[in-house]
Image 1 (cartoon, one colour):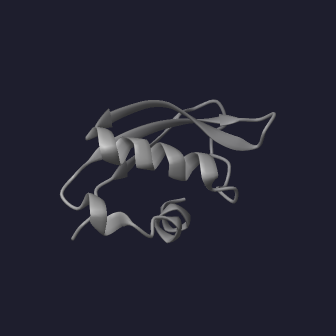
Image 2: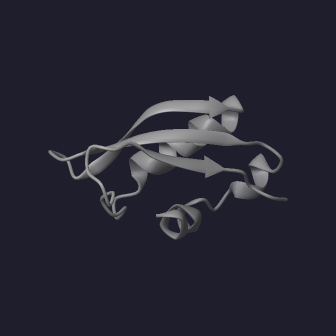
Image 3: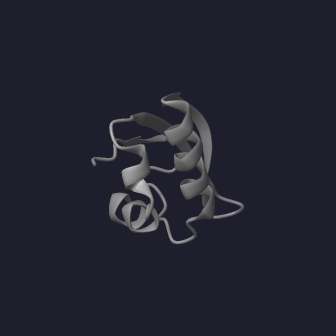
Length: 76
């Protein structure tokens, strides 16, 4: 999942030094993830939320029903 999101994160340098932890839950009906919680720098968390919502080819989790946590921490 990380490589797919990283490819979509073309403006990552803008958020260098910031961190965000994103909790995502797989939505079976839509076959996509829903962000259910973020923690960290607000600007980066909003961008991470957008990335998850916009990225259509994310694979389902190995254990459906379990939330997935993903950390965003762009480097400069």
